[in-house]
Image 1 (cartoon, rainbow, N blue to C red):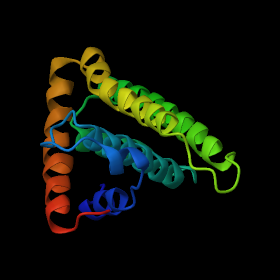
Image 2: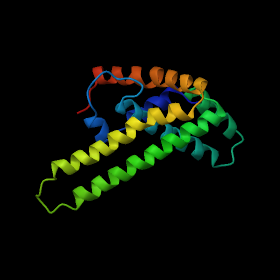
Image 3: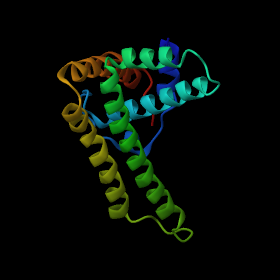
Length: 169
């Protein structure tokens, strides 16, 4: 079973430019900060499950079912969530790699072009804002409600608390 500690540990390790610059406002299940956390959490937990299953463990179905239960989705819903979040994660990584290459390619002492940085930021926000619509379109109504419940309970509420008690700059 996936523990609360695992969720907290995974969420505690997230740092990205998109999060640092995301628009201020009330956090909702569709807020870019929340979606960024969802993508990161899903990716890290999937890696942990894959690593623990790599030894041919007989508990691989138990771990997968625990993750599905945690997310509040069925088997088919889990596959769709995985597809959407993995695709978004790869797209974000591609934008961040391009941004990093742009910044590292600047001649020494030359400041980056603000419009270029703004473009990278907007590309990330576009990806993050598309995820909820993609998930809703691909999930059954029950899976969508289950995932929304997970996001509200495990992400929105906890991110709000963290922002109030220990804002990161």
